[in-house]
Image (cartoon, rainbow, N blue to C red):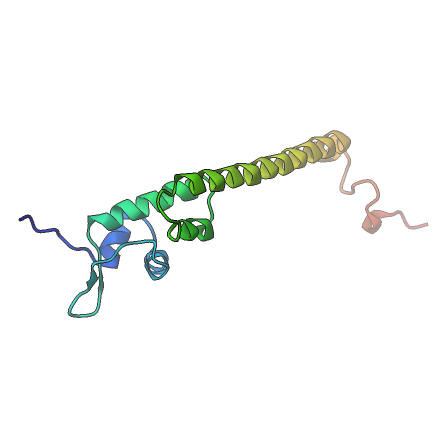
Length: 137
C-alpha cells in the first residue's frame, strides 16, 4: 500500500497558483475534494484536489461561471450533455461580448477620425466646443 502525501490549503495554493481564499470557497461549495482535517484543524487535500482545481481552471477558461461549475456537481452522471449546454451558453455570452467590443473598437475608430488634429496636438490647448475655452468678448 502506498501512502499519499497530504497537503494543506497553503501548499495546494502554492502548487496551483490559486489564492487560499478561493480554494476555501471552492471547498465549501463542494468543488474540491478534501480528505478531512488535521489534528490542528487544517483542511487536508490529496492529489485529487490538484485535478479538481485544474478542471475548475479549465472550465473557467472556457467561460463557465463558478455557479455553472457548481451546478455540474449536482447533475446525475453523465454530466457531458449538461456541460455541452453550458458550453453553448458560454459561447453565446462570448459572442455577445465580442460584438460589444467590436462596437467599441468602431467607436474608437470614429472618434480618432473625427478628432485627428486634436489627437495629434495640432488644435491648440482647447478642443472644439470646450466651454472652458470660449473666447471672452
